[in-house]
Image (cartoon, rainbow, N blue to C red):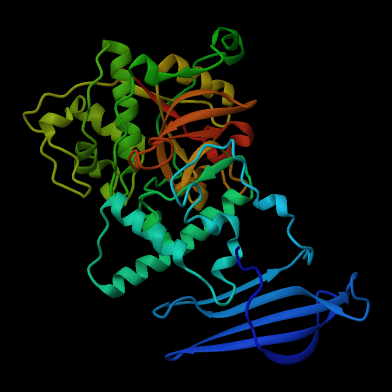
Length: 438
């Protein structure tokens, strides 16, 4: 059985809370120089069994304090009890169906009481067993190690906050799920560093979209996935470098080259990072696809990854001299901004598209499954911060989606991919799409 009522022993008198006259109970816990204060407000109702007796009903529980011995920040949590029942739990709840198959102890759900009872972590005496179990699995799966006990504790606290968000989001049933991934011990600033799209707010020199879109819509299939056609290379990992713009660009060039030659090859992101500085890009500190296009037009293409050298995850020096360059382009086209039909037409006719999105939300950082829709997402050009590759479209449970390929490894999302909602141009997927002329 899981505790939902804190164990507090000191009466602090009476006080109004939630519209009720309540008894107030408290406990102060001192650990070193740090002080945690727990407070519980309780009202009373008549007992249906014993009219002379009163039954306590919890109204609110509050905790103020440091969440761990080495915690660097002060937490304030409160729980409002919407209902509370003194009735005995029916005996049939504990009956075991003999027809059910036997499983090894402790069985499904072990270690997940934070999902079943989210109050367990905050109610005194609180338990953090689930946190340490989850953090242990996280470290083992992703090979994490830390330089010192203090750094380990700091990362544990970051992981704690991200895990709370993940459980809270999934309990809300928002239509898509989030999960612990390899980014779960990173701070907001570290996650922000991965989002390297930097819009300059100027005209990018692209040609206007040439199609009369309504005339072509009847010819498009209901769903499309360029992975099935063989136009998409495996998911890559930009590591700690804010080079997403180079991955979106190269993913598009790889797809366009496949459409022209029926050959799928891996081109070099590192070459764009190293060589397009003179056109306004800033390597690991961000960039834009059209500036990489300008460099490609100047030099005559882009080298293969095998010849140029593997991805470094940091800025390097440009060394394309005397290398064979592929996929020469003659220009690029801007897909009509904010038009989902034009976007779908361009995606079907011209292969995977280089796009920018608003990815500055924890729900995106820890996305796992389902059609992603974030009400807080923005969609104006100067509000986009991350470059990805659109590779398809379709419908799931009646909801239209775009299929996007990210560059945060296949530990992120659904093997590195996400389904993102079409409606409302959520997160700006159709705001800044381009394709090259090859």
